[in-house]
Length: 306
Image (cartoon, rainbow, N blue to C red; front, side, top):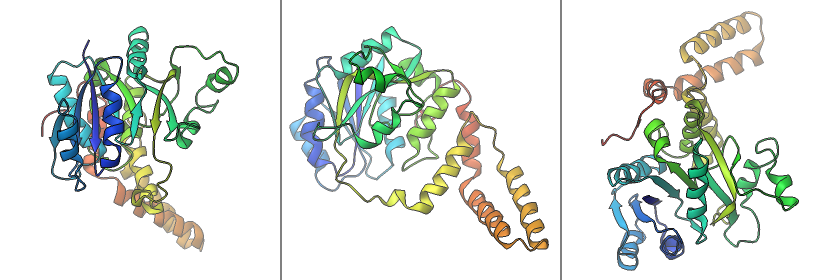
């Protein structure tokens, strides 16, 4: 068994010792690859000096989360990885976490992606967004089992959990592949899990394994501007291999709806149709459509060297 941990860094010097130190202390030994996305705060230099055992790759630019992880995943596969563990730079594991995840995935090979439970940085509560992923109608049984002290040491299935800490099986990587290059800054994990589901694999969370995710104090993010989020949601919908959305047909329908609304003096309906038309034509491009088709084919999509 060969487990590789991959961390993408970008100006993350404040977390280097905590994040990489936790991997160094893992009860299950892991080989660690860091892909640095052009940090300017001394992150790669700190890693090089404090963690010489880490394989460090410097991209020289900010490629985004997905493309940088693809570099690390390719290296791990070349080195014979049986499992790949993706970890955010602002997160850290407990010593037993990775071992528990690997054991659970070995016992339950139907899972392509497994996540531990996510605490906040202080460790005094669940990470806020994570707690929303495991609510009862999304993750049946987990909340009740935790409250009643009967949580099973096995995965609970859910549709989505963010990629702050994912264990990926070799089978998953060989079937689903890497992250879709159509998503550079956010949306990468959503699209990836759409593809995991398309290929018949499960996504789960393991209640006996834990990480800390230290992101509570960051309240602004330029990638969550309302317009960008709306555009990203459209791209996610049209990139989802489980859906057969056709941008050309939808735009034709919207054009007809716009003309009809103008003729009938339905100004509000006309404005809505025009806005939706403009959004789809700006968000959906040939590359996105081509990558959806590619993601439907079993194989290591998006992991070929550029």
